[in-house]
Length: 105
View 1 (cartoon, rainbow, N blue to C red):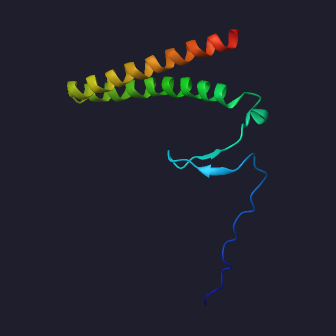
View 2 (cartoon, rainbow, N blue to C red; view 1 turned 90 degrees about the vertical axis):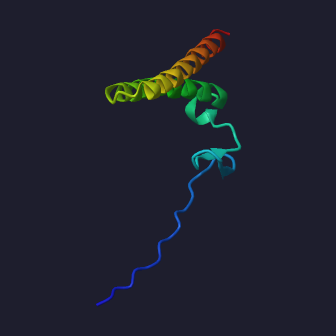
View 3 (cartoon, rainbow, N blue to C red; view 1 turned 180 degrees about the horizontal axis):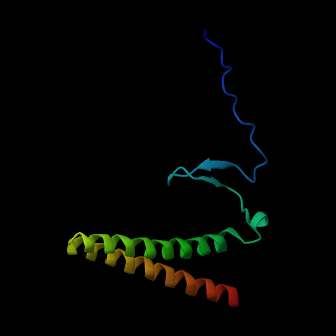
């Protein structure tokens, strides 16, 4: 016996801050408005903090990738990951320095 299943209903959107639009990167929904009132941190500062964390996370991930390549005997790939790791480390250090300057001022 077949049972009729009602069509799924679209979720009712909750309150929004500004007009949301999909970004081109990873399908993330972004807002046209400053959301710092919600987080207590202006978007530009939050973005800088996020960037530092993302770079540091990437440094750790790339270390694992380089070690995997080393274990596999692929020195070229290990070197590639370590160069990328170095660039992520630079990004983290630069963003931390910028954040420190901005928090002091």
